[in-house]
Length: 290
Image (cartoon, rainbow, N blue to C red):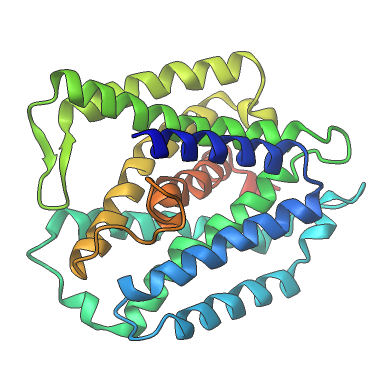
């Protein structure tokens, strides 16, 4: 327990430095490092015999994305986010909707996991929209306010942390009804409800202090985005749990003592961050009307 706590404190400190101290170039390098470590851990979950092939595929995907829209241009005084990069993030929506079905029918329907090409597409749709969403969030109004994007990203991530912590403690205290025992035996419906309640409180606190930047200007779109991020964060966790069970792996890695691997730490964020942006853009009509 002591090692887990120390590791957690260090991770929080590093995350805050990454968000608020690092300039945008260093932030981008940190996001890319996170992405590549996750890709390294993803290989065995996809039934690759070696970790190298998927790392190469993930690196090529990120390189193509950076060539299509260099992130440095996002933070220039007149810089804008290309609409096709926003649509890249929105690819998370159909992907995570499919993930709902796959998690729900596990372990009755698992034949799809024998297809390496399908597994590869599955993993890229987990990782690439997340990477682009991180870059877009941090670049929010960057020229006018260096910290605005950092607060936005912190506020979105805090929804996930609140949902996860609330679910853990509520589940420990009153949890009785299993949520999805085949995928994650320790999760309960009572814990899920408790996590949602705590996350909603954190959401309104973040909104009160203006942490969500321009994304709280459209009330309906903001609520859909925030609630979506909270709910889909649970799906992100369940999806990674399903992948690990499909190959009988307990932790995705050992990079964080007491906490497992990178995927174990960011599985919920993989869904929450791109879904927040996607749902806001779709409900507000920003993608259509500009």
